[in-house]
Length: 380
View 1 (spheres, helix red, strand yellow):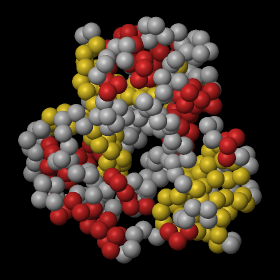
View 2 (cartoon, one colour; view 1 turned 180 degrees about the vertical axis):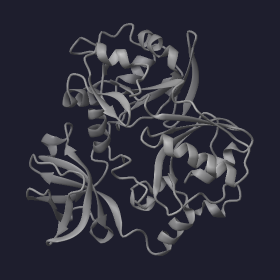
View 3 (cartoon, rainbow, N blue to C red; view 1 turned 135 degrees about the vertical axis):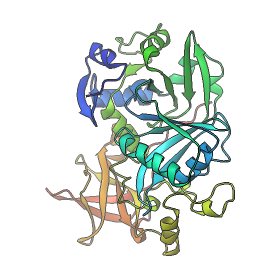
């Protein structure tokens, strides 16, 4: 298995390690629920170095990304990052990505670990098909990526930089920490404020020591503590964020995934953008009245959670399928139930619609509820 530059850090903090798409990664340290609350109330450190990082450089790099991405790239400015999808010809989702504009002709794309190996030849094929001049470099193993998430993160970072806490969401800056060059973006996958940091692999542990110089993570009230993949999943579910292999996939129409804001179906009519791979299929979906099913949120009373693949029923008839489900550590007491996301027939997506979920071991009542389930309190 691949090991990230922080592998020893995980072992030192007694992480429970698992094989995650070929990477030896921490599932949890102290415990999933404890780490979930730590992120919501203060701050957590996530090693996300397993995510792919691919650099596009050359005079046609923007053109290539316009062809690959469902969002416009030409109107991005240097220092801006943008969430997008990469689709196949049928309008299914090959991956969801974040694109960083470094300069006029240079970009960085962060992709999911499970999709990096299939995306690299896809990128190269698209470049060759359009005869574009662009160097595509996989920098995953030469760099690392760390996410700091939670309400205490920005106050902590302000001790090192006055600029980073002033960044708008989905903006980034390149900074030097001693001799270490960092890309720091105000992005994340937890529903909390925070940053994601990309840096050279060989400097990762040094940078973390500098950052945590005054933080004793062994204390119960530590500002920051390590957090694993387990709570990352419950955090993103509460925040209504899709996950590849659940709400996103090659056989799932991009327009049913709940991220319509990231799909510019009319890009083909924009002289500066042009069509993207899959745009014709998605145009046809729009012309047909949209996809038959859309992503919706459910609350299930009680302690039992619906799991991926469970059937959603209305009057005994199957009308949808659960994509993700879990108890909500943040909202459990308030909701008196568990949460789930599902693909549901469009006509049944109204808030308050009463449904049922067949878990295979029993049928549970459910009700359609707005997403995200959780929104972080606004800070000054």
